[in-house]
Amino acid sequence: MNFATRTKGTAPMSEHFVFLPLLIPFVAAVALLPLARRTRLQRVIAASAVLLLLLVCARLVVALRSQGLIVYEMGGWPAPYGIVFAVDLFAALLMLMGAITAAASLFFAFGSVGPQKERYFFYPLLLFLVAAVNGALMTGDIFNLYVFFELILISSYLLFSHGGRAGQLKESFKFVLLNMISSAFLLVGIGGLYALTGTLNMADLAVKVAALPDKRIAAALAAVFMFSFGVKAAMVPLFFWLPRAYGEVATPVAALSAAVSTKVGVYALYRVFTLIFIHHVEYTHKAVLMALAVLTMVIGVLGAIAQMNVKRLLAFHIVSQIGYMLFGLAMLSVAGLAGGIMHIMFNMIIKPALFLVAGATEQVTGTADLRKMSGVIHRAPALAFTFLAGGLGLAGVPPMSGFISKVTLFYAGFLGGHYLATAVAVGVSFLTLFSMIKIFRMAYWGPQDGLPSKQLKAARGHGLLLAPGAALVAAGLVMGLGGSYLIDYADAAARWLMHPAWYVAGVLGESSAQALLAALEVVAP
Figure 1: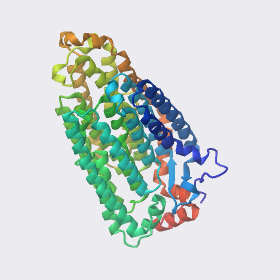
Figure 2: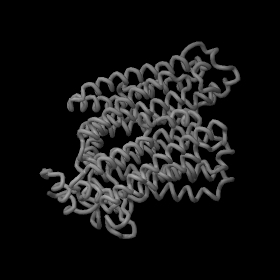
Figure 3: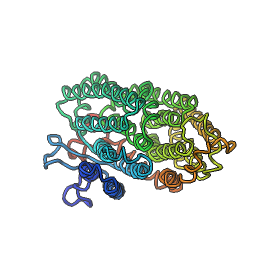
Figure 4: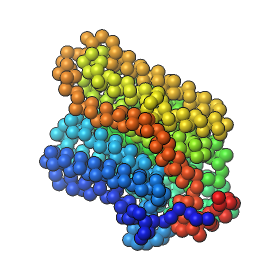
């Protein structure tokens, strides 16, 4: 069998190019450290870095659509002995979505965080977070995945507590405590895998775990990884740290974290449960992950309906949407994974958009409490209709791309015989729509005298704050209108996930891929 090519020498794109999504935000963040007092220069450098990152990620996605996988070997040391970065289309798509959201969050921050925070390393921390996320998406080594998760944790904690309010410090402490516990479990799982196989390279782990004569210990380690990544992804019942934490932090931080932080946890679940832990699918995927997906969808949306704080309501929706993504993984089919990937991509755009629009609304009304809002549409109609468009998209109303991803998931669910889970997913979509209408009715509709007079000036000047969120909603609409392209890319990424031997061939060579196929007792197509 001729597996996907390993890009070396004659590859259409240099393997060094793949390192840029990590290098650009990291170098920019370091460059900003001595410029704490020069806020304008900080803005220029940060914006230039994020826009350059956006172009690089877009170029990477186009290249990987045809190349499949690009491997970068640190110091020229080959895998599995050296440190490698292995970027496939799935990782590149998430990096592109992350770059788009980082740009929108950054431009929102220019008009909202204020000079006090800007002088205390707000932009370097934001860029360090982006670099750490990209590193986690790029690495081909399970221990380096842990390292990048720790860097994400440190950056997020500093951003969550940035400002020093009592609420921020309290919720950021809970956030860091729970995530440190999950990191400890992750380290135990990595240690167990190393003791079992003698390697940390993910492609090599796939081959050696498949070759184990007794996989019961590997199955137990799968549960450890599911717990650890489940905390980071805010999966039920491990989501308690998220709603209050996101309700307290600055809006651009909440928007960026909503886009990338939990999605890296989902990415890690997709990676290890399509590459390494694929030997007890009926137990790990069809039973445990499927049940957790359904619970995450339902509990997340019910929590959202019960909330009266806009940010917390949106944070509960993050949990609910994570359930849809896990649903795609639990089906472990091309259609299911493609639907899951599209839903991750869409949520990385639309969820931050809703946070940014809600942040602009908070600037106008002076509160995030729905009971104290009313009639924003009379003073800021663009704000109201932008939120409505984003909210309908989140609920899966066409022509937003959320409709395409959900229909693909529903189709995959019925095709795979998961009728109950699919019916629950459909029902949760209606509840999501109900909660979005609730926000629109209470905050934007109603008599305009609900808008405090002292906020009228802010209402007239909300345009600059609205622009980043509106741009993300427009991006979600474009993704929906270009649905055939979106499906094409998601389907290609899903096929790579469903064929772990392709990934192994790209990192270790064809002989290792043949060894994996032999261990899996799979006949190469």
